[in-house]
Image (cartoon, rainbow, N blue to C red; front, side, top):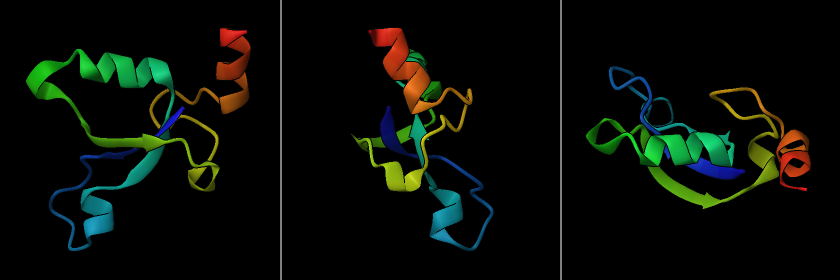
Length: 70
């Protein structure tokens, strides 16, 4: 899991809606890194559970991801 800032609703008035910070699983982060110029992730940080424990894109939980790696 990573905590990522992604492109959001660019028409919104709030920067938090234009560039929301969401949890993403490693699989989704990897897929996005291969998307080239069509990537959606602006930046990545170490996983912070304060932003949630479920991937915003595929709904995989942090526990499921940990079990997959074990």
